[in-house]
Length: 426
Image (cartoon, rainbow, N blue to C red; front, side):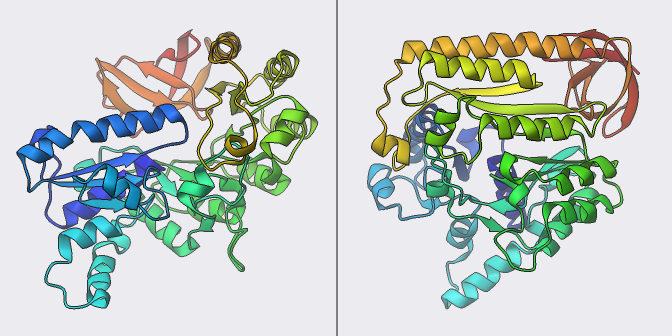
């Protein structure tokens, strides 16, 4: 989501005559787009912002914009006191404060300023690409749902990104067409709970309907979506994915824990058995499909026995990827307010490595099934004389060839398969 927001801001700044520069010391405007989903991410953002203070002292005319979840959707008075050298504070997915700071001087009224900003951020600069990306960006992210209203007990996203808001379908389709015109071959639809698209707005289409609309856009080769919630992964949605050739058979389906009591404390809204039923429904529809999961270790009160159930769940689901995180209490969340962070950090790391090692073994075994077989790959970029691309199931593939493969879908034969990537020949 932050990547998509950053490209949107870049496109808007280019519309105002700015150009990207490679060295931060050369910049007139610096936008720091931040994440605070875990403490490590927040620490990284604060460290980077603090490093800009000296540059601001050297260049008083430099405009620094702090953006994203560190700012959040509420007031930012505390941040202004903490970082007085920051000129603009803007929340997630909100480029208005920055554009207003740049363009607002001399505008007579708030209404005229807003009208001008809307002109800058009309469909040409909605969720599209900067000029420098045209014809070079094969895959792009497209937000369809902002915020989240689910309120898992550990999650700071509803506090920082606000309540769930589905974007109007006509805006999304317009953005998708714009991206296709600019050479994008693959679009990933984004939402904190993407399969809830349209649930918050009367008369809006479902995610299934939206996928069917985007599927008709000429020039697009592939469509993906993330991140899903098991409670909203309907059979209609699964049937739609199976019926539309451009929609890839890859599902991001977080479980977070394998124990029912931990899931209840997390306020996830399903049991381990219900999650496994969704996995079974997915696998019954596709001959080849990939599933990526999210898992938290060391949640407050998680015993060794409860953690073992997460290990058992991994062996049952056999996901292609696990995004594993050590529990990190986030200010304002239910778990931070009412549950002691009682699993020692050393034990969290041990559990983290158990999951990491098991997932590497599972992924290696899955990838071995591709050896000697043919699979279509969409090629995204070239690095060190190798073209890089992904299979429909999101496997990373490298190919050595003199042919220009950028943006092309080509059948390849896999010649080597490791846990995190594969080698192939066209």
